[in-house]
Length: 346
Image 1 (cartoon, rainbow, N blue to C red):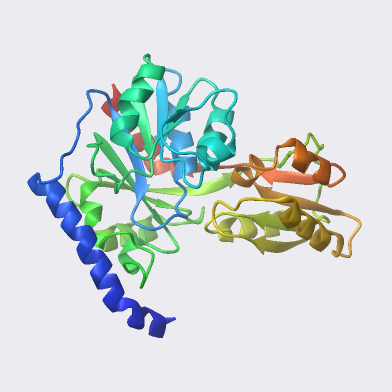
Image 2 (image 1 turned 60 degrees about the horizontal axis):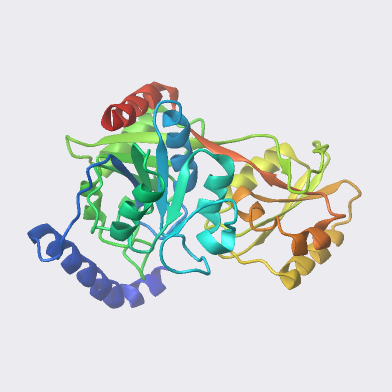
């Protein structure tokens, strides 16, 4: 692995130079930055996926939804459409992307829109949802054409940006120094047992600016939910076949291993697009598990793509569930984070 990284260093340097020039052009005004007269919170990262942006956006929605009208603007990664689309009752994961579709399904009163060009997307979104008081911009840390009022930068505990390398030698989209653009840094997917001492070590490694605050979150799981209204009756003796198209299944696998007898994993690339062929292959592998007490498990992001008539027929007789997941802040800093978000919006 180290040898491959060394080989790719020249390509990483060229890529990094291009990105640095782009950032410089924004800084000195060659490229324009648009500042909208509405609070915009950007939730993003330095790496290519896998840090938990969607559950953190959902956390902020839950925090604000009682007092503010919220809108979410996303690029709509891997959707089959182009241009601006405002999510309505006819939208699907194919038309707006799996993560925006998941958010729209969970939060009916939140306006959701997708647009590759966020500068054009914001006024269109405000035209469709004129009551909007705050916009959450998903995965927009590198979208410098918009000046977000508050930048929330996520970094995975198991692969801090301080220990990563710029692509293709590593997974970073830009050099580590870009973290200085954020006001809030969140270390995600931490173990629940992470001590204050360990947190302080990580904070020292990140070396935040005086204006920056570092927070830590962990993942927590609710009771699995049937995709086709199956009643959840599994127990400690149940065997699980987990299939998922997300960037990192490690924390989910570790959780399931503590809850069930065994876990077999089928991993796909992030934002996997399912088909009858793929699902039949999963079912075949599921049927090969030598157990009478077994279920199929997937993630919430994958589940939204499976609720269609064509897949319902294939999966009708299979006990298939998704594992709901949400994030929580460590209690010592939760109120501080909440206050910073609410004070910015207010």
